[in-house]
Length: 396
Image 1 (cartoon, helix red, strand yellow):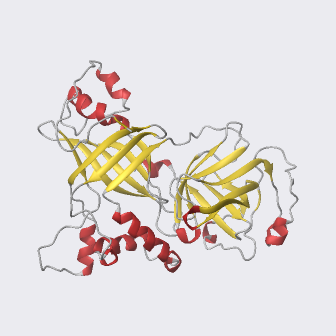
Image 2: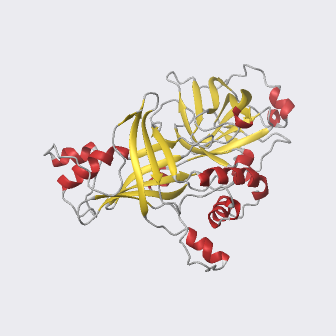
């Protein structure tokens, strides 16, 4: 790797202003308001926008099988990095969760300050215990502590954003972790009294240990979101939240190939079976299906549909009945409509633990409307539903 910047904590960034076009400087970084910064345009441009302005946007986390999503955006008087998380447990209809990670701002002496504000337990005086509820409450409080940010250049991935907290009190140890208040709070947030909590528990526990032991160091790569400007497609590209059995809800990106013959769904967050950055499923748009409710009664009737059961109607979408076949796992049936607008043959990625012996399993790609699609996993006798991440979830 070739380092593009140095490690930066609080302090002045020694960059000279080389431009006098104020409007051009701000537009270059899509910056709209100087409100709250308490410095002039020239200082803001030279000390903040030039070194940090191009961080604004979305980044995917390089984190074992789990991946992750970071949003960097302008707020009043600062640039903020937020960790974006899927809804807890089975609540796929809920909005994404966001946790503040770091803030880049200017001090009164016009120096750049970079601090971590990731959830962090306040230290108690020695011998002071406090009750359980009080401890969990304190876990959610923000405490500013110095953090280091740097951008490096990777020959394969391009830019890499690295984040590191050096505060020894923030770094957790594996020994005794499951009894630590931070761990208990994390489990509580992930399960949220979900009626299916028992099904998720083992996966949540494993992920919690891995996640919390690495919370002091992150690595992200730039993520370009697919644009929603395709014509003659069954559903527009974008970010979605999808259900993955005991692994819970994951964040994915839907897009098409250039000739619009295939829809591809790629994981942004993943799990020990199929990790982040892998293709989760793809649908063959050249093999659309129109099925009756009777053809969907069970696995036998569904697999008996001819291989080339093409649509007789013209157009890319046709309203048709949708049913979950008998004996398929459908814990999320409260979300599933009775009609869909498009259906085609598809293949979904399956694998053993640690992504061993990965392969593609037959299924059907289902579009309900612009906000929802699904996957019928024929060989797994399972169904996954996916909800679009709307623009308000990304703006808030």
